Amino acid sequence: MSNDADLVFLGVDTYTGERREAGFRSPARAVAVKGNRIVYVGDEGDVDAWRGPGTRVVDGRGASLLPGFIDSHFHLMHGALALGDIQLSEVRMLADLETAVRTFAQENQDQAWLRGQGLRYGIPSPDEPLTRHHLDAIEAERPLVLIAYDVHTAWANTAALEAAGMLHDRHDPAAGTMTGDDGLPAGELREESAYGTLLACIPEIDDARRRRLAREALAWLASLGITSVHNMDGNYGQAAFYAALEDLDQMSLRVYVPYTVRPQTPLEALAGEAVVMRDRFQSGMVRAGAVKFFMDGVYESYTAVSLNGYPDQPTNYGEPIFDREHFARMATEADRLGLQIFTHACGDGAVRRVLDGYEAAQRANGKRDSADAVGRHRVEHIEMIHPDDAPRFAQLGVIASMQPLHAPLHENDGDVWIRRVREEDWDRAFAWRTMREAGATMVFGSDWPVALPDPILGIASVVNRRPWKAGHNSHNQTVAEAIDSYTRDAAYAEFQEDQKGRIKTGMLADLVLLTDNIFAVPPQEITDVSVAMTVMDGRVVYER
Image 1: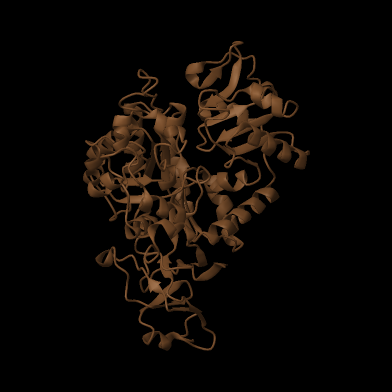
Image 2 (image 1 turned 45 degrees about the horizontal axis):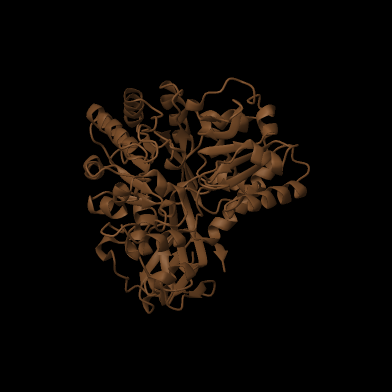
């Protein structure tokens, strides 16, 4: 059997991700791959032993070679299916919304319902909420539903509300259905509990279109250097869909799929459905073994659980989705069964409640970690953190999973988020530096399709962030810290640190070659760097 490598990189500036060199570039200028494993990391002279007539040699020309990017907060299926909807991420004015909807409607006259994705808050203006009457003026005949970029609010026209039987039914503003001056729903519905009935009325797409959109999404993500994602929603059927693509050799990234737990989910489902998922899906491409909870909503829709309330609604602290005892009971059982726990918590009040639940599980079951592949529970988002709670992450062994592109760039960038938090509390927002200095393992992701999934944009945002107010912490990160959160530490966050996340002999060959040396370009020019090649499981899945 030939000892020749399949792929050799020469002239690369290799960042291996080893802790001993954190913040420094490796002297390794060559990397060799055979099959799906890295077989050599070192200087260019000694790599010749791996070169043969069938070896492909890639000249990196001094560009960075990194471990493949791991996006630690993702919605793969939702994002893929959203590619077939009206794209609204660039809409900033009502006129733009009208153009986007009408263009899509004209091009898709066979669709009974029209659905848009990625709409930002503040349209028509921060002081004028979007209503069904605005949408009726754009599209009155077919049901129209628009989903906010954070997937926590939906807006519907009158035809959609009527089709779902929601226009004249009893509605409760406290449950997320906003009321108009006429006493009927205004068309804004906050959280899935309010808009779930509406979405259930939209016809399911067929399997062929689902597969086509999934392949389209996978190809795009490969072009961004993403080789693994931690999904944040899931069930057996979703994992089976990815496993079927794996059987067809059509998966170009690895996906970790959780079992979604809602307040009505019975305790017995953890030992039944979640454990069955874990035992069934443990391949190289599709893995299960986690459960996903939601503790609150988001600041934009006043549904994040806040310790201080909202500046313009001081008596509104947000309503937790799980009460303390219920969450602690469910978390304790999941932990006992060896299931990793992901919990959405944007507000500082929600973060504290989640940490309390994890602490209760630890008291009941004892502190465990990689010896039996449990523990390493996670809090997702952490948009606000109280100073007393930051050290608890390291104390409890809890991972901080955060999303760089969720943070407003500055206080005047037009993002409605910053208006939901008191100015004196801005220093506690998206507190990456606070979390790292407190000893937390911090991982980064995009929350796609909530934000763009490009890790380079995420790295640029955390490196270049500036304080929102004089005297506050910028919470910015070094390039090395940001890369570690997208690679080495992200692999640790899914118990795969011995398989991926570093460039080391014996590790999986998940690699990304950039167009430039990301450590050498000026920080403000990081967004000009792009991906030249993505290797996943030893295969070139994207090449510029």
